[in-house]
Amino acid sequence: MKVVITPSFPQISNPEEILQLKDILVDLKEERLIPYETSISEFKLLCYERGFNEFRKDLRVFDC
Image 1 (spheres, helix red, strand yellow):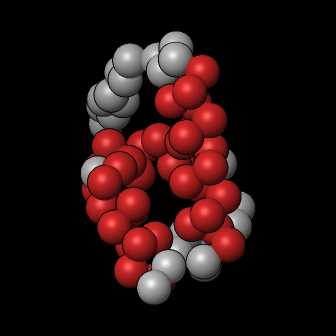
Image 2 (cartoon, one colour):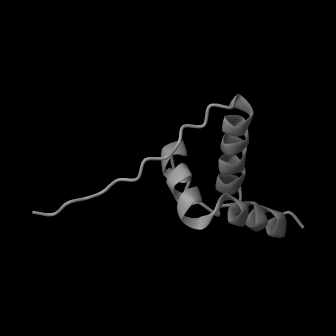
């Protein structure tokens, strides 16, 4: 029997944080740094895996 442990992440309750997360996701999709089909839930998991600030750095590099 294979057991899969899924992480439990705190819910983002601050509306500003939710909007910021969505804006970054849209920008990443426009720059084709992340697949267009990526949902907000998948993006949250990626942020925890990679780090939200790393995605911000990617956008700044392409913004030059």
